[in-house]
Length: 262
Image 1 (cartoon, rainbow, N blue to C red):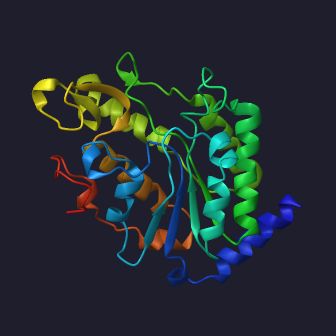
Image 2 (cartoon, rainbow, N blue to C red):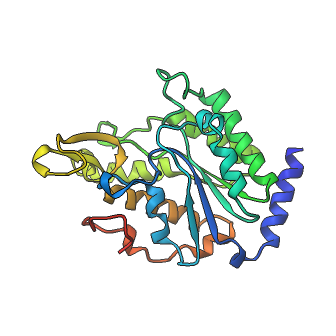
């Protein structure tokens, strides 16, 4: 059955012209989620991805904070995403942060068992609807082991890499790419990619300051979206042709002050 579904998905991908693949849906957690202006400078990379794509590509961000594969499915969010998806849509699937929450049993999904099974379900159900699933490994936290950032969700990313081989599913290795990004920025310099603000910074959303090594600032969200776009451009999927060769809105070195592209 799996071999048949893989073959069917491959035929579908070749049958659809690039111009037909104009929508990207995102199934993920708080690292990709949308945030209102009242939460600025906290942004998710899913908010910024459109800034690296051609204008005729629609990004439908269904990422929800605090969700793992387990709760995204059990709360009906996965079924809701499938219900609004259209033939030929691409689905970016990024989980792991909350799946690893051993202290939160309602979220917890062990990497080698439930997490793997949930991702398999998402892959097969996507293909069964004529969609193209793309796995995305969890983005790096600002977590250092010596001079380099370390992978806090390595077991989960490894499961995804194994599924690439066993199911022929495209993957964006956001973990590897973001680990390099954070490592190059260094332990001090990488603070600007995450939510690190003191009370003296007078950030309205965080009047008491914040030191959050998981969620992204504006610059961090733009940088992560740029990595996703760059990896997406290298995949053999029609929407890859819609990724802009130059993405200045995602490579800013100073904040714009909002989630607008420019």
